[in-house]
Image (cartoon, rainbow over all chains, first blue to last red; front, side, top):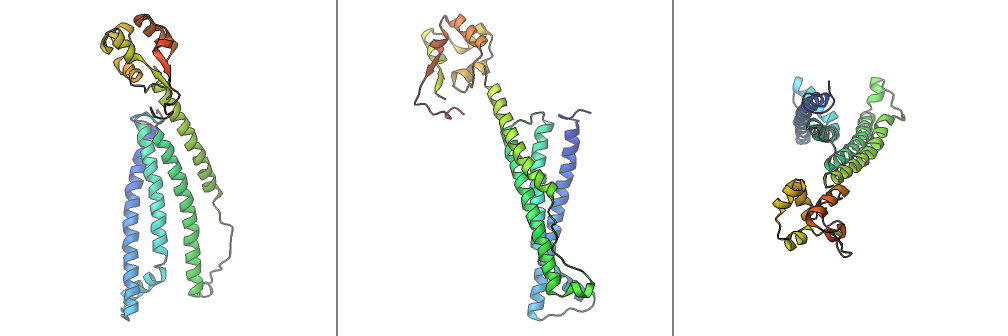
Length: 183
Length: 75
């Protein structure tokens, strides 16, 4: 199986990325709906409305975890940026012409999005930890919260490598452009 | 780019069309247009040779250096 062009490995990966793109849209819509529901639950609580039965549990859960949804949405958006830019790069791979100046920009954006995703992940974990601590859940549930050096070194290495590859692509595109205009 | 290709002037002096030159030197119309409009980044010796042969000139007659020209203007 060839690597570039139509019917290649690149085109198969492009299909996978297309599926991931639509799935991430679905996840974004779902998370947004949860955020709206959490907002509604806060307003209901503020107005003094107390639902009963199963709805009561749902509203309580939404109130407790509502803080996480904005961060979750931001994470999904960062993920979508990565998938979208990868789709655009793979489109050029499928067309058999990857050394275009735009791909350097796409790689840079992917690097920034991965970095943003990592930071948001830490913020989300921090928010959840804070929430559990404030609600005194660690004691009740027996959860032990401790500061741990949970830095994804692989992801940060990918960020640095992508920034370097972006420059390699930029140089490649410049050389190709120069060759194209050599008569 | 400060280096300019003066192909249009040479063609005008010889009352020759770009199509005619294209047929004579065997360079595609698209490539000759790139040369004529100043978009070219480099010129091969073989191209210069073919042009000089047909136009009866020296390589220096086809090129000029304008210091005031913006380096990125043609990009």
